[in-house]
Image (cartoon, rainbow over all chains, first blue to last red; front, side, top):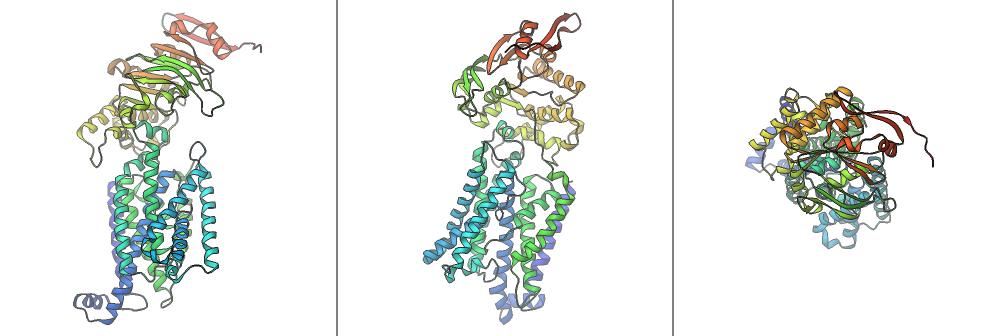
Amino acid sequence: MKKKVWLSFTIVVVLLMAVVLFSMVSGSINISAVELFKGLLFGGHEEVEVIKNMRFPRIIVSLLAGANLAVSGLLLQAVMRNPLAEAGIIGISSGANFVALTMISFFPTLFFWMPLFAFFGGMLACFLVYSLSWKSGLQPLRLILVGVAVNAIFTALYESFDYRGYTTTSSVKATASALSQQTWDDVQILTIYGLIGFILSFCVYSWCNVLALQDKTARNLGIHVTRARVVISLIAVYLASVTTATVGVIAFVGLLIPHIGRLIVGSDYKILLPFSILSGALLMVTADTIGRVLLAPTELPASIIMALIGGPFLILLIRRSDRIYEG
Amino acid sequence: MKVKEVTFSYNQTVEQLKAVSLAVEEGKITTIIGPNGCGKSTLLELMSGHYTPKKGQILLDGKAIQQYSPKELAKRLAVVHQKNDVPFDINVERLVAYGRMPYKRFLHSPSEEDEKWIDWALSITNLQTKRKKKVEELSGGERQRVWIAMALAQKTPILFLDEPTTYLDLYYQFELLELIKKLNREYNMTIVMVLHDMNQAVRYSDWMIVMKNGQVIARGVPEDVITGERIEEIYGVKAIVDYREDSGVYVVPIGPCQRDE
């Protein structure tokens, strides 16, 4: 058991390094790894400079975005006791996206505060989902249906807004839902926000574990269930919103990674959390690299690749693991 | 523990409990019986602090139960529920370790004290050899013991059990009741449980509380509480209540009596 966990971590880390390295050297500019490191160390290599300014931030942002979304999904599933809960599915990402972009189009000077607006949007969506699906307890099916509806509404609002051409150029980046045009500033923002989110999630892992039992049982074990729910949801919404503000709506990471994690390393959040961070980063950077390399110099957005890999993979997983999804 | 004039309603229209008063004596086994929907499980939930009474008070060591923080309450009172959700891959040891949650300090890893009480809980429920097994793979009786072990790891003076024998076959029912008796006699735990089987209630209780329609209609030592007339009154079932040297007081239900309404 323990051995399997260590092995899985090792494999993910090795894969992660391999993909990152591959991603650094390939794309519309191809370069050998040796040249790249020479250029990085001694400077003066024109192509390396371009890669450093264009490709590196993009890789780092996709790593962080993947990790953030995976953890966000993991936390939402714990708190909603629902295997389908994910920021992209129940409307949190689209809520974040909508509010952030409307605010920016009306007040373009407040661009710096975009993550904050996104967070408000995410909170709004999350609050709507909770309050509208609450009927003397959380019923998983109702919650997902309400979430899907909330998602549809925010997506439609956003699209109608976009269609009318209200959005200004400053928000184009986030609407593209791709990872191109990332700068070192984005890296900085996402790193800081992401790290805070990860630290916070490690603080609540034992709550997540106990919430997998019944609410009654959790309460008998001295957990303030409502408070735990609110705190964990806040962390999850925060991670998803901050990411959405930077890279747009990307579905599936938050759904896929926690499920793969549970199948591979089990249901203990102490192990599941770091595993989700690593494999979320891996999946995202892989999807982005494929999108970038496959048809170079044109690009496919990571969200498309993600859905293309994610969809079939999820079906496969669910078919192979009835045990977890019973009842 | 004292329940004083407690009235409670889930939905503001029907009162599940009407001015219920009772006292739980320390170091005794108290059993609540009554027909379905009489409010016995609701009462147990209120007593474990899940709901706030509409009227009245529930006192634990002289202090209203709502005034305890969840953690403080979890150090005084543990509950074993009738039905439980189990994470698919959890093993016995890890589940029982959750019983130490009330003692967990932020960012601290489990102490020797925690280990000691987990070991104790596992040995008393006879689960040491199963500690690495997945809970999911255990038999019904073993699984119920795991939940009891988790409650025991909380190291509380009081233990509540909501119909602990319901899903078990006869052998495991008695095994469980013997365990409960042992906890009471050897470790001086105060036990409050809800039971359906009257014979078991008579055999294993020091004190019985009979409920019907959200009210306590009788209380006392089992021999006094369980009579033919009373069973008819509570359940609408005719029953022979008799005494044998080897079994003590026993009940044989015969069949429904004519209801005139």
